[in-house]
Amino acid sequence: MKPVITDIPGVGPVAAEALAEHRITTVTQLARASVERIAAVPGFSDARAERVIAEANELSGSAAGAAPAAGESPQQD
Image (cartoon, rainbow, N blue to C red):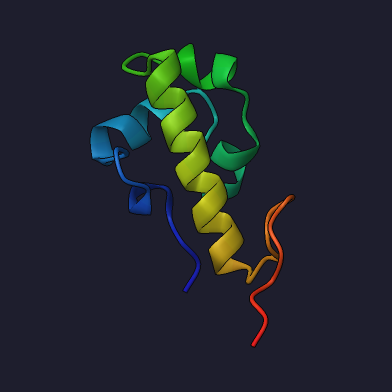
């Protein structure tokens, strides 16, 4: 099942509506957004924007079965 924006910790229905008013409606859109763009949404500070963007990246990466992040190596047995 594809994650929805309210699956992100700290993004409930009210925050999702505020993001939607700024044309951010998907986890992928949030993951690709800049901190400045999200911090411009009412209710989002720079710190909260950084946190939800990081969560969105993690959620979208895990949903797609992404490769390890830069600097990480796959677990070897």
